[in-house]
Image (tube, rainbow, N blue to C red; front, side, top):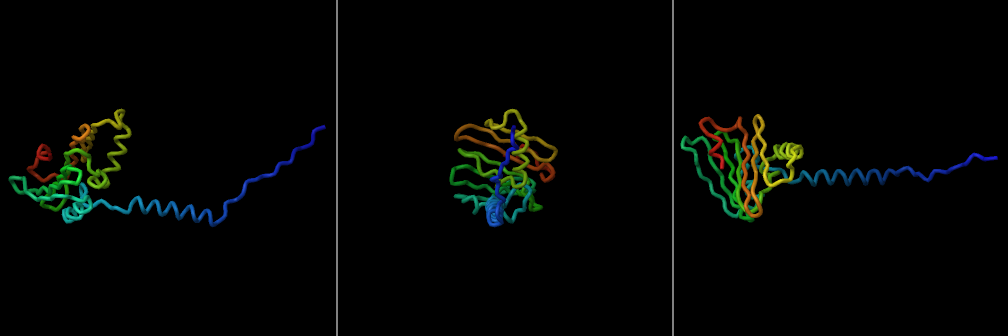
Length: 172
């Protein structure tokens, strides 16, 4: 004759201190990951370009106007890596485009701001994700990046923010 088997459970309930510690650690990680805000990002304002250059530890910065009609200004910076970054600012004070070229890709999270997450999501959906070149053309956002070791170039711009009379070919 078989007797019913009695089992004891060794499962313990988590104590409150362990739960609070885990929540605190997750909260700290969340704030650390968002501690360095982007400054002169695509679609941002012109006043933050100087702050952005400081954040990227720019070695050389120059400001020059390229538009014949005076509708925008280009802020060109050279990063410590040797990469040149250009931020195109309209007379309305909006960063409508960024471009880069050099031996290393700059911090695109910093340059693209909120558009960086869109780029990552779209790139993950493509069959060539992780390849050397990337091109994203949407209704308003265009991002193009490519190159090879020690020679990268790219640009990103918002079509709706490009000043009147400026062509996409001027963004280089």
